Length: 287
Image (tube, rainbow, N blue to C red; front, side):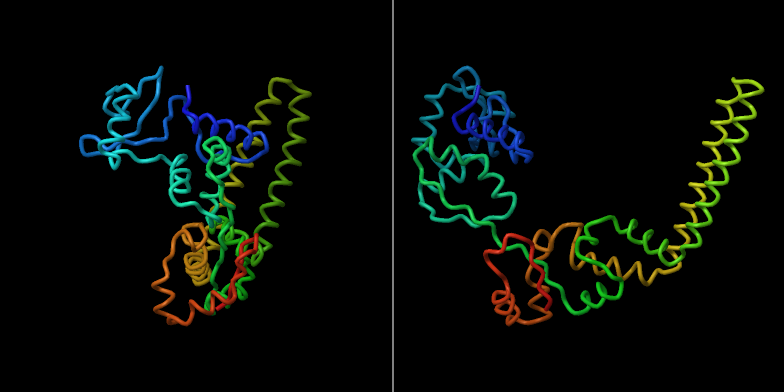
């Protein structure tokens, strides 16, 4: 059983999934999109068989009781994530809504609710998404031939890739060892299979153990190679922390204070002039 907003959001969510997208809010049955402030806490409200349940308290109330709370103490009720934009746009009509990826994903689910309640739907505009690259980071990107998408990948994977590029003979040696094991053990399996078919499985198991030992030894070799160029690893860490903190875009993890402290307030105007507010893709600005 769904409230109107939950029902419409659930239907929109299924359409998004069918089209290959994700639904921002998986809607469960009985989800009411309202919260009530009771006993010092903001608590979710559920809906079942015409009765409202205050989640976490096990308390149930008729709809009439909730209406009385709304009339006598409207501040005690607040909208959930699927209802909040609707209530805001009803009270303060909005021509355009500028939001990030998560906010836009919410609007993809609540869009049908606007028509249901007769609320004019705002135009949804993606906000600009930008990475700011300072001179030191630009030099590091160039020196190590790194792209911004590279920084989203596992740093250890990048270090391993560099080690293989710098020491190709190591990979070649281990590749040769694998080929030799495969070749010689294939001959052993053939001979044993002719002598006693039951021994062929034992030979195959021995081949697997030998290859596993080679793999383990190669991993140790790669760790040793990565340690030999610690300065490069440190530079990668600093660059990644600056441009992709925590593996996410700067806008998710960094504030403006550090940038202002290093470049002064003029940097804000500089960035504003260089951002394309209507660009659909991620932008990179070199300071």
